[in-house]
Length: 202
Image (cartoon, rainbow, N blue to C red; front, side, top):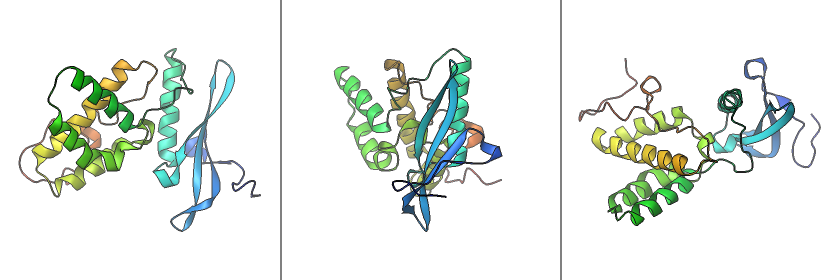
């Protein structure tokens, strides 16, 4: 591979992830060069190349392929992805929700504390397209080691509520809600009891 301005030439992620590509960067992620991930698809006969993240921010070939699958599904339903609008971060969604809640006269101090203490650090700066349900499942498992199931339920319910509100009021944001109920993938917030249990044990 021939380096060019700190990056290598675009390479395919492999037959398993068709349409997903990466470029190795001059910077490192752990012991390996960081990778910038891209997906390629067609809109109205035109080729679209979309950058979806770096390995250092949690992007992988599988996650990039899931984003590509979402894009293709949207296009098949007649929805053209709005790349100029981009994907909001969870912080973007939170600011919309917080402003709305205050205008409604709601007491949101508990929610502000919950967001600041538990959600801002792991997810706040990440775009929704870069938050995978498996990331949420891991987050839930880790939280259950220190907090009661009821507390974890409240945290995930807040995240889901924040994103749902933002996607409803911002039509140009067409991302999926990574905090939505998905029992099979371990991100359910609806079936928690007050015993400290591991959700991924047989």
